[in-house]
Image (tube, rainbow, N blue to C red; front, side, top):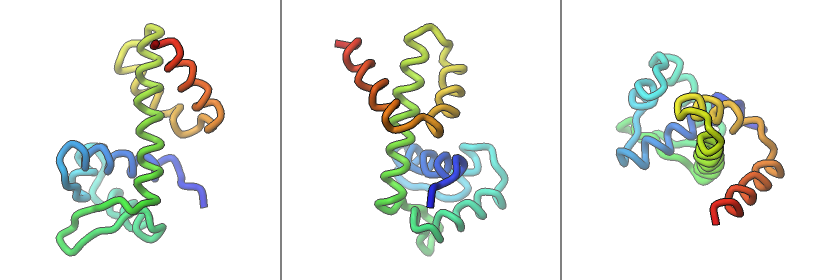
Length: 123
């Protein structure tokens, strides 16, 4: 089953928060995304049921292997697309916002070609 864009965003946010702080709770995700606690609670439940995250007795969220794979893919896309857009003259805020939209719809083939192009031009 293909994960919705919102699910990908949640997984990416969990990964970023985990890298930044070492531990992630639902409230951290809610604060980071400026979403309500009930919205995040529902998303956490869906992601947990899909096997992308686990939540321990203390409410700490961990990515499973599948969740980490999705999160890392989206995060890599986000970083590369943001940098690419900034390199062609887009301001940082707009680049990050646009990258966030593009990262979910760009095909793997197109992303790989773009990645190769960026690597080639950065040599």
